[in-house]
Amino acid sequence: MPDRAMQPTPFSIEQSAKAAREASRRLATLTSEQKNAALADLSGTLEQPDTVQALLRANALDMRESAARGLPAPKLMRLELTEDSVRSLARSLRAVAALPDPIGAVTRDDRLVNGLRVRKVRTPLGVVAMVYEARPGVTIEAFALCFKAGNACILKGGKESAHSNAALSEIIRQVLAERDLPAEAMHSVSTMNRDELKELLGLNQYIDLVIPRGGRELIEFVVGHSTIPTIQHFQGVCHIFVDESADLEMAVNVCATAKTSAPAACNAAECILIHKNIADRFVPALVQRYARDGVEVRGTPLVQALAGSGETGAGHVRLAQSEDFGHEFLDLVVAMRIVENVDEAIDHIATYGSNHTEAILTCDGASAEMFTAGVQSSCVLVNASTRFNDGFSLGLGAEIGISTSRIHAYGPMGLEELTTQRWVVEGNGHCR
Image (cartoon, rainbow, N blue to C red; front, side):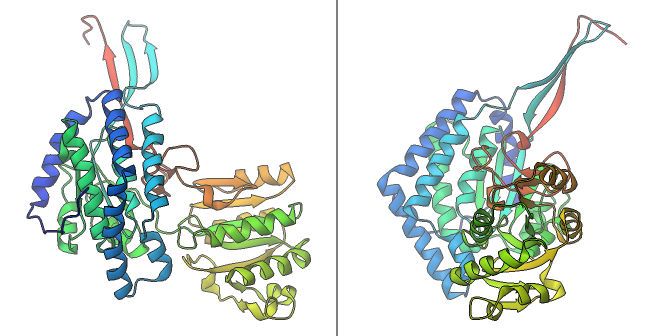
């Protein structure tokens, strides 16, 4: 793919939304073979060396400009594309292509006593608008999932990733054109200002669903101004509860990597809850590991007392303030508290959690059952890191976001969550 300078393209927001609506009508009729072939072509294009290098050059511009604007290091990590991450995007496209096509799937098929055949069938939503920040990979993943589910998409990326998104969008539209598919199935823009975004959020005659993905300020803006149904999560305040029966060596590693592997991710652990009966052994070990990994611990006075002395002990634990619990740090910072039992851990999560992701580390089946029943977050894990709550890790191929709205989509949104269901009824001259 040759490099091209980013040129502002005059467009009408309403015209683009209308074009996406028209494209969605054709997408709804595509066969699985047509959709999978286009995704395979896109995957192959992303793996071509010249494409990879062009994407990295575009991304390097974003990285330089964002660093100059003072974008925090964790967000720069999310913004960066590498050869490995581009190859990962190509693999995710193949994974989505390999998934069963939900469109046309029959979820109910009844023959009524009057002879009518009544079926409930999965169908596309229509047009999905997504508003997101500094993650260029979302451009590929969101398009792939919307396309496979028969939806057109309008992708409003952040200005931080403008060059990267433009390059990725050009590749997508080129592949669609080569397959004689409507390029209007995907609209991408990173330069839209707040007034233009408000206009987009008011186009409910063309757009069926809005998904904001980013910081709390962005999500609150979208939810506050949208006249279109919206799915979102405001925060990822994720907890790990270390039960008294836990394998402590395993627990140290899970708690540490759940924070350090991607501290700015929404599924990173933000608070560690520790059973009182193991606290005297576990707290010092975990605090030492966090000190080694560069993680700041904000703990209660009891945590400080148990941490021990020295730079990797109490001296490394900062006294937690009330606002540290229920806070999404998005950085190498974690809160820590001792609890009496499973019930108190569940109560803490009910008070401070965000319905995103919680985990229990335990060797006691009864404790695991109590925790998974008592915690109603979108994903609850037993003896596994909170970092597994994403579409790719849970076998969805990719995800368009994680919903903490308790509606039809709760948790990672894959293909099925980008469909709705309608009724198809067959009669034989039936009248009422």
